[in-house]
Image (cartoon, rainbow, N blue to C red; front, side, top):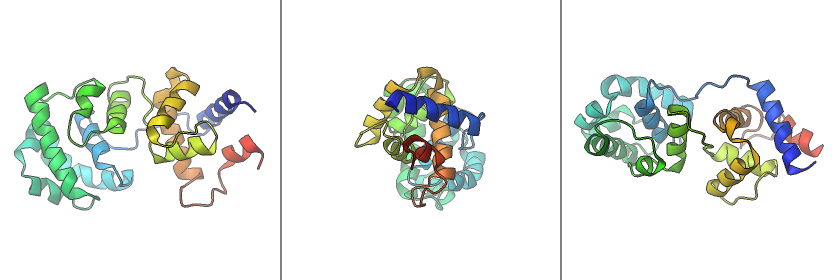
Length: 206
């Protein structure tokens, strides 16, 4: 089976499994999405969704977030890993949104990635799920499965993202990256044995 055939088969199977894919992080607009994604680094989406309702009630806009002290933000997100750093980033992110963008989340990678706590993956999620631009955010699930499915030999998420964009049509990027994440969590968890990972078995007849 060629790489292209494997990619097509993966797409078909994921579409059967996940014809509809909700965005895993609860949010109401591009700003709350960006905050939620920034908080999700090295933390589960489930934990982020437990913390953000209270945070967004108090600071659901850049204006309100900027008014809080770092310690107040930290107290609201203390259950999340790296809460000290993330609290500082959220305050400065809000201040810069107000200073540079009149409180509106920008729609370019360059401007997004210039904000504290916003790396390329976070910017990609905001561009794709917040604004509908074609993007293929790669997290550890996607990187691991793309390697497992021999669709990339990328040594990091940046190389894997390039390979994913080459092999899958742009029209499916926004949906497919979520489908792969859901599949990884349900059928091929990093710490599991992968017994349920039927796609890998199908591809390589294991």
